[in-house]
Image 1 (cartoon, one colour):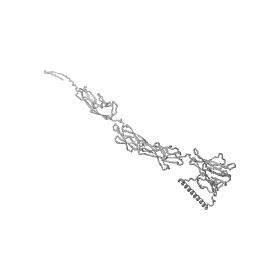
Image 2: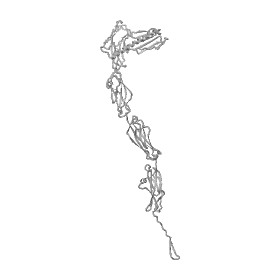
Image 3: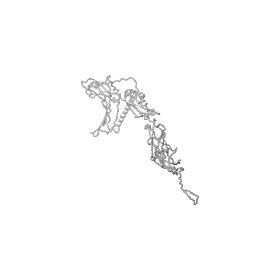
Image 4: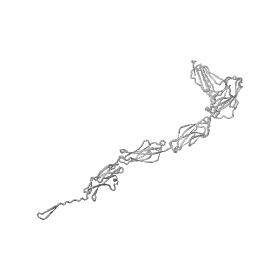
Length: 589
């Protein structure tokens, strides 16, 4: 209020009201309600997510009191890419991807500026903690130490180094690493997430030439994340397998007189190894069982295993021989195995029958005499022949080939005995030339012939013994003949001694408690057989004249003494024993 007073009495005065408007000056800085804001946010928060709101006041008025908010400074470029703030409200929101593995926390500066002239500004700090999520799977890194592992590698041999990384934090970054079962390997922990892949079992390249090892890494997050990595481990071969034959023994059947160079057999061995360790070579191992040097008999192709004959074999000289084939690989050290080869020579019909003395083959004069009064079945002669072959090839049969249609004589097909078929008649010739054909049973059949002149005489008194002289060659006995002679003499002496002892025992028993039985009686028959009789027992023994050696077989009598008993031995092959039982009406055979 402005008052003016004059100098009069009474003084007079007057007043005037003066209104003064104060114009604002931007002399106040904006003030934040908090100098430091703290909050947290989960990583991978969606765009537009509100983080927090900052507030500030300015004591000025008008434009000087109007505040706008902004972010950033030169060192907060990454913040400007992830966050934004509303300049009017101060609301901080997300505009980019939040990744804990890149930025586990943010420190943001917010500036509040007024609109005065000159403008004034203030700043506050926001600390944002990023909450980790288990959004990263473990990462596996494998470094191989060796390209191939030998199959004889010892347990604990390191094959590869394995490292595992999980970019998450806390439990989300704790990783456990292992491998699937079924492979002979395991992981050994070196330091934290570093491992060694080592051998943990027996390796066998022949069973598995390589192994696919699957390494699995799992973290402790919720939910847990897992990753795998496949590693192929190749196994290198070691010469630990010998060549193997399919059989331990091979039988080869070879016909005699086969051509030289014939392939007897192809042997093959398989080696489970590979490359050089599986290269097999074959060789023949000499044995001591062969009478002839094996090198002169067979040879083998070292590459293919073909066994080839080096000579033509004769069954009559060599029937069987044996040797071993060895298969050796090329490994270091080399391994080998053997297979036994038995070669059996098969007989071929390559030998003709040979006529034995006293008759000789066709071309020589052989004669026999028979009486005119000979009955049917009269024994004329016996042809003996042998064949150096064996089996069916040596099975001989006898036939009369000349004269054709002869009805006076017959010959035993298997015995070679020539006998009369009927009595003589006045119309028959006085001399009968016979040609005997001896054939074997081979394919093709081989044969030999012998000629015999059968002369008919008036009576048995005219039959004179004919001696056939066989010329003795003036040559020395070989050792084999000498041994054969000694053997024959020894067997004869033993036989005679046994026979004498048997007779002595029988005679001694005659004087003993068994003397009540009658004395034995031996009867000789014209055809060369003989009979032995003792009381009620009688034995007829017929020796086959077509055999070069005879066997005496004593059969014990298991039956009690009875009225009659007959044993007949036919050709040394079969025998029949007939016994009459005490009741007289039953016969046991």
